[in-house]
Image 1 (cartoon, rainbow, N blue to C red):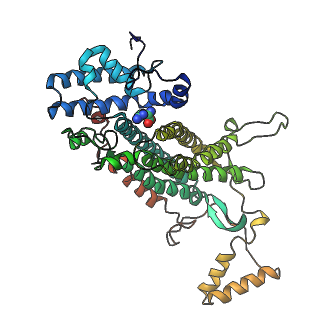
Image 2 (image 1 turned 180 degrees about the vertical axis):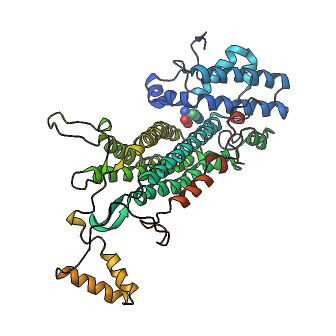
Image 3 (image 1 turned 45 degrees about the vertical axis):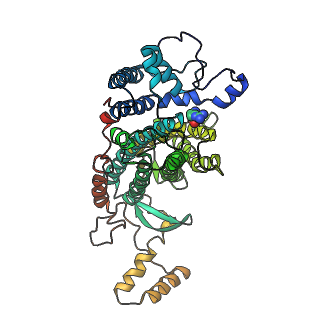
Length: 459
Ligand code: ARG
């Protein structure tokens, strides 16, 4: 974009220039954050200008000139990004300045019937909807990788633990399938966040509407929103609330990934020796030559655990905020935007690592697992007609007096057993999860408004 012809003024500046310290402090890093919202600001403005022309608040030729120039600006942003000039307060001011430079007085007409308060609110809705749809599709792809891995190595026996104590026989499919199902459930929470972002606050102006006959339903349709935020007061209050729901969805996905990472770190320990990672994905020690550390999973755990603080942080920023716009809300932006990047990175790394996590196998002969099939022995007696509690007692006694006969160690592979209850080692239910995965595909779910062409459309 061209350099400023004159030092730009604030949109609201009258005769008194703003104190430099106050400006620095209040703007903070908001302009960097706003660069991420730039394209969505233009998309919102295109819908607004189109509507102004259609309801007759602007001459059609003026609206068309605005839309045309905004479309050019959108292409420029998509190709090269945008930087907000020194002295320009935010992206909303930068785009209006740019329009005025290019179109003269026509550019000055764009802001009728709106405020930066609803402008930033609609930018955030569009941005968050887009980002969360992307996250949804990344998580969805990751589930497939887990299901594939479950099919590839699934029958390998693993010990199951409760209370960190040896519990019952499990399998690799049951372990990794558990995380695939967790992420499938997490997608439902992500869908809730997408839904929160899929409503139109535009036209709520400063938070109390406008006496002008703008058509809010029309901008709702143009921006492919699922619905309108009807009251201008709630439209304004949805700012921060939407981000909190997005943060909660990210925290949910993050907690699943952190837990998965924790399992891998623990099961790679020599004391468990259940899983292995190829050498090129492990890191070494500067002093201990033998080390092959699972840093990548520790860092995944740390990053994902840290992401889980986000809903609390965003809640605190908004604590006791009354209705209406408050500049405090700007300080949600510079947490949610980097967190979205962090989340995406974590999902990407998890996706890249999962296919390399392999069961070591051959572990069940270890004497620490000698009682792991005690429940099966109880069930054998039950099958012979012994009441469960008596069978339990008999096996417990045999363990206590040293006569428990576990027979041979459990095999290294759990045979498929369709007669076993679904969700147990012999019948882990990966096929059923795959069916759910197919039906939760992004294109078949909640994305009836996801047409990205129309999100950025100029009409
Ligand atoms: N940077 C501001 C924010 O994020 C933009 C809206 C400014 N509105 C205002 N009334 N100062 O909230």
